[in-house]
Image (cartoon, rainbow, N blue to C red; front, side):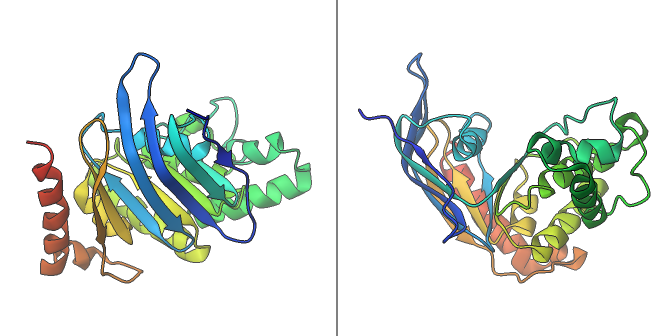
Length: 254
């Protein structure tokens, strides 16, 4: 079998495509089976599924951290990746952490500071630039992680359960702030979560995966326009979309 590749950035079209992607580890464990997924700029696709179904593996393949056993991955545009842990450097201030990726990319100090400040403003952390990670709440540290990736001006943005460790109110607030970031500069987003309500609230689509080997068993269109308010979570239509995703997940988890 020929080795599949992750295609280089193509400026003509922004987005992400996985076509016929399968993943098997060297010990023979089959993680993903024939994943087809297209995400274009202006779409936020949420992925839900049982633990171990390969949700995070999809992101690692999209980012190039892993290579598929079969199929092809195409990423067109600058890529940002936010992990479950904010991974901030404790000896750097908020501003220093946010500007770190730009520093690694060789961006000059003046422009780096400007990019960092723009990103800090976008995630509502203005006034905390000189604070260290230990002085920030969990939600603020995660905002800083998002801001760090924003300095790359991503056109494809991957989120691996970034809000999973937060309390419910912080999580809902960050959901709204992420939508604000998305509306400010729309990207092709993929958001992995275990929470079906979060998946529906954030996404333009909700993709449901089967247990390992992970397959896409449902791709549900979310009918709600952005921006979305807190009242949406209590609406009958929101409950219906959540139930559709939940039913699809239960059907393959028995």
